[in-house]
Length: 431
Ligand code: 4AD
Ligand code: MG
Image (tube, helix red, strand yellow):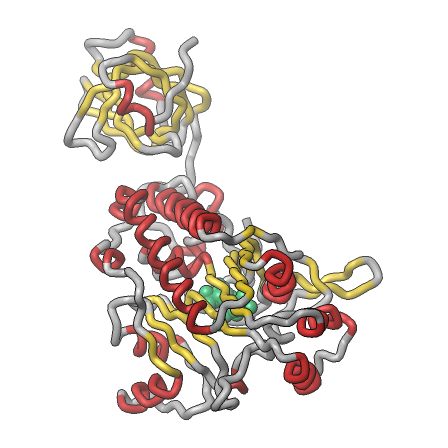
């Protein structure tokens, strides 16, 4: 029995006979020739079965194949400039593993609910596969960036006794006799880790019980959270723009074919190189008012506001110095203007919204104690966090990048539900 090769490896087997394990995703026949569209996860290739050249049983086996039937195909690899993979298989044998009966996802159009109910199968489609390949490359590029720049990977807990980003959207669970919550962000723990290891980052799932049904919100999403000791707000922005540029350029280098499958306009991505433009919250408010938006200083931005601001630029844009009152308790106030904080949200171009939220953190123990009182965090659950300001406090900054929003932007998808293999959405926990 021949060892299997993958479709991705065909280029090093030109002229040779190989055996692949695959699924049939489509088929055409002229009566004398059958064209089998095959996929194995690593790529797509056309298998050509010529009636006059193969034994009767091979022709019969090919004739019985239905969409998503599984099989082993043996054939000779031929270069073919017209095909998407650049190669064709001249089929000499086909061993069926299973004939799939009535595969529910046909090449015709399906509604979103139907596709979401069949997400476990929908993932097999070329578009969905392309998104998952880009997602994997983004993760690889993220880890490469931080590993190469002196950061340690640290894993914060998932089950926590407290909240990081406010108490309105917490998932509650019992932890034996105690109350516990699924993490909204690992940040508070990453601050502790930064005091131990200097520069750290985490990559893990986070949970928000948000009752909002938008194109940008998931209930369970993955976040990358770097935290850096002795780094101020400005220096953190410099890390962020280098980081995001690296991720985008890495996808452009390694995922050309997938971006093509997705119909992504890559010229818009090629431009994503540091430095990124910056606009203060104050100037953003003025800009929005000028353009007829009914918004006042002190209000938070909604999606239409972010889109309007993003449209002024052809790269991601930092909106900096938001009002203290609408941001998290841990953000450091501006030294000359305590009504705003040293923070920034990074807004992706083309209307994809906020992909990063970050800030310099309060390092002063007194001020942190005041914030605890104002936000009523007096609770035992946060006691340890004050220790970080009591024992060798230092200036430090960090940020969180939402993986799925980044995937949506880079892939050019209009909804985050296609950016994660099994999305958890408002009222959707299946499959
Ligand atoms: O702006 P957020 O809430 O910031 C934090 O959680 C900080 N503690 C991060 C830090 O400084 N370490 O969330 C960060 C990012 C957002 O910019 C967005 O990209 C993503 O996480 N995000 C979501 N993505 C999908 N669905 C949701 N419901 C999201 N909420 C936030
Ligand atoms: Mg945010």
